[in-house]
Image 1: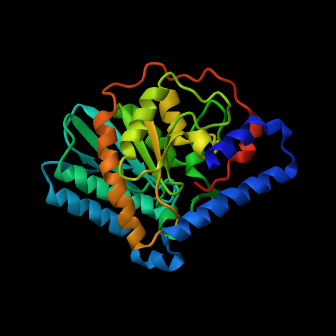
Image 2: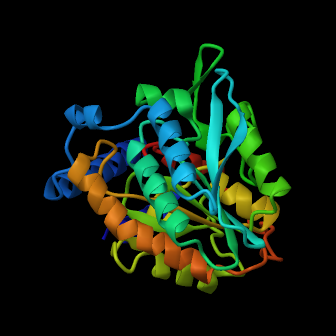
Length: 322
């Protein structure tokens, strides 16, 4: 129902009046509240159960110590706050793929899913692959439980900071996003999964301000999303159709600029999941991530340019809640 409602709204953008946007926001937030209530997502009090970045770093070192033949830590960069963004390199295959979580610092559930996925592939690496896992991209936001990353007294959205064919908040005002973009090219990443909360959904490009949403690989992308959602039962499909248009995101940038098979996971039913909800997110998404990477192509997409038209009116639909 929501997918159809969003589609109808996009189709009749020019007929929307000022009050239409508020109505759409209330519908989305109401449905999210209902879903969260059904699954007992929990609230702010649950945050005490979760780790700060120093504890995530220790968790990565513990994993590398436990599986030294399969796992090494690496440094992505120092961010604008002087903190070191670290990740894990797992396996030794020729195909290099990436999982990155917590562009938005308040989405700590995505961090825990990334760590659990890292533990899974550390114990049983994927044949022929090297997996890079970055559990937290936005460290100051993560420690403060804030969506935003601070820069010179401003609060920036890291996942609107990449170049894109329909615009961006940036590009690359943040060292974190610039370093991640450089990492894609330097390591020749073939496929990526970015982990966020919440929707729940697993989606593919295009996800920006356009009505021209198709890529030459929609069927392939749909198959990867289907593989990723066997256990979770999450909705899957085009990013814009299932969520909303957002310009300057990593997901569109990675595909558009490099031909990376870029999949976005919107995990669970809340930005504040309690421990039980996080356990469930891990249970249903780690197998899906493994299966998806097992099925991704071994080479980047050849036809990844955007040939459609942008529609600036759709920028109003970016709720910045994903």
